[in-house]
Image (cartoon, rainbow, N blue to C red; front, side, top):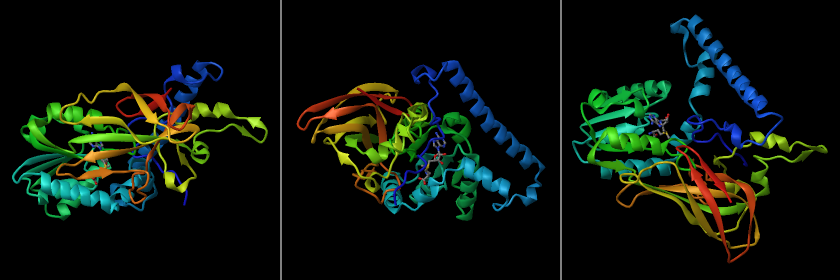
Length: 361
Ligand SMILES: C[S@@+](CC[C@H](N)C(=O)[O-])C[C@H]1O[C@@H](n2cnc3c(N)ncnc32)[C@H](O)[C@@H]1O
C-alpha cells in the first residue's frame, strides 16, 4: 500500500507556508496574504460553529458517538496516536529505558502524556511521584481516566497544560529528578522537542537531573523519487501549466513511507543534526551538510531519520529500512534539485527552526 500519512505532528506549526516574503508571487503578495487570512477565518468560523453547537448540547448527551464529539475529536487528536501505541518496538524500547533509567524513589516529569503510558511506566519502575503534562485537554482527560483505572492516581498527577506553562514550585513543589519525553516526529524536531526540552531543562529539572532521552541525532541521504516528488509538486495538467499551485507545496519536512514508492538513493548517509539534550543550546540554527554521492542523478530531497539515545545503550530510531516503525522517514524537499556525480561531494545548507527543517543549495 502506498501512502503518506498525517505528519507527527503538524499541529505545532502550520504546514502551509506563512512567510509571504519567501513565497513565489501570485499577483500581489497582499492578495495572497488576504487569501491566507480568509482561509484562516473560514477555519475559525467552523470552530465557532462547533463551539456553539456544543454549548447547545446537554452535557449528558456528550457520548463519544455524538457527531459533535466525533468531529472535535477528529480535529484535535491526531489519528497517529493509535499507530504509535501499537508500535511494539517503540513501546518496548521506552519501557525498558524507563525501567533501567529511573532511580527508585525519584520524582519524574513526563512531557506529553498521550494515553499516560510513560507516566504509568515510570510509576511501575519505582518513581515516588510522577507529574505528566499534556497540552491537548482531551488527551489529558483520557490519560487521567487511564491512570485512575490503574489505581495510580495517588502517584501520578496529570496536568492538562503545555510543559512550557508549568512552574516547578507551583506544580510539583520543586524541580524534578528525571525528565522523560517522547515528543519527536519523523524529522526529530517537528513536535517541538527543542523548545520543550530547553524550557524544561532550565525551569523544571533539578541541576544534574536525568534526561531520557539524553541525546538526539538526525541522519540523511540524498534521494530521487519522481513518485514522491509528485505528492508535493505539480507541473502541467491537461495541457495547462498549473505549477503556480506549488506556492502551496510543503516546504519543510513531511513523513513518507519511502519503501512503498519507487526511489533511488544517491548518496551515503551523513549526520544532519546532533543534540546533547543536557548541554547543547537547542536553539534554531543553520549549517552546511556534505553528502558523498554514490550515483549520478538528480536529488530532489533529503530523506531523514532520527536516533534517540535512551541511555544504557538503548536507541530508538526510524531508518528508511524499518517499515515496522510507525514513524515514517522524513522527506525534506530541496529548494532546487541537486545533480550528483558518483564519488563527488554534494554540499547543502540546512536551516532549522524550533519546528521545521529546510534545505537549500
Ligand atoms: C508522541 S505523543 C507520546 C505520548 C506518550 N508519551 C507515549 O509515549 O505514548 C506526544 C504527546 O505529547 C504532547 N506534547 C507535545 N509537546 C508537549 C509539551 N511541550 N507539553 C505538553 N504536551 C506536549 C502531544 O500533544 C502528544 O499527545
